[in-house]
Length: 385
Ligand SMILES: Cc1ncc(COP(=O)(O)O)c(C=O)c1O
Image (cartoon, rainbow, N blue to C red; front, side, top):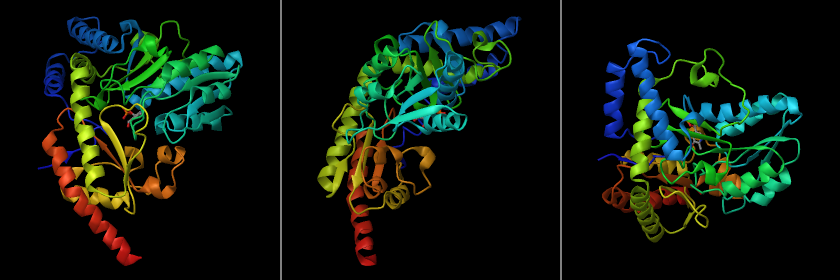
């Protein structure tokens, strides 16, 4: 039996999503910009998905722009806002130190072009303090970007409070909701953001489809230039099957968001309680604050997380050492480092992320095999030492 506990990296398709992918790929293959019947049918598919995503976010369909995923949505938000606001003299961007690389590396790229950037640190809680944002934002700030839920530890950020600090100085507020959308309620008006990114493959939709939600009236320069797709905001022939899949995934998530959050949350709590009880020298990272219900990040004292990951994989259990992008390298997680943990503790941490097909039996299997693997690795370290 193979067990998948890496839902924050990507998720398996919901069966209903697969069905619509096949149907749209084979039946509605038209170009949504074409005037004829085939084009209009493809356009109807896009409109339907647009309504579904707008409902998930409690936004308006006219505010939805389809992208190729979360990375593109983040790039569009940051680069689009930067370019739109540059002529007003705003040349400064603010983000938290625990953002995904899609945000951090976009800021780095803009810094190389003369933009001033400020990364706001977090404490041991893994939560961004809105007052630290207030201190960072100036009248020259174009945009503040803080993620809704962190991909490595699952902490939920106080976005509405942070948005208030951004808006007080006339800056735009963006949130990367890639790890929250579809898992917990996401309400764009309550969050009070101007821009919000999401990605279909994080909630049982297909890879290669995402959204930037743009609050009506927000000034943003297109990043992808070309034709007049997406009301001239994002050029390029739309990936109609993947967007249809995104729409179905959004509806599925919305209909069972509370029940699924409770079910997965109970599994996560069982996993944490089981591991903490069975394995000495373990600690849950970021547990003090609010978290998305599917994510658990645990440090194992005196165990190299990469070795434990491989040992678990040999037992048929897939987990992660943090963000997918840094897996395979021995770089300690920038998120755990930003929380003030030693490189040692950061390198001893595994992320367990659960989802739609996770079961109690899978959690129990993990809790059964983990203590032996940890003990074995610790005794090898003792011998080597
Ligand atoms: C918080 C966060 N933002 C952005 C992304 C990138 O999304 P995508 O894989 O759709 O490009 C990810 C994916 O790992 C993520 O976890």
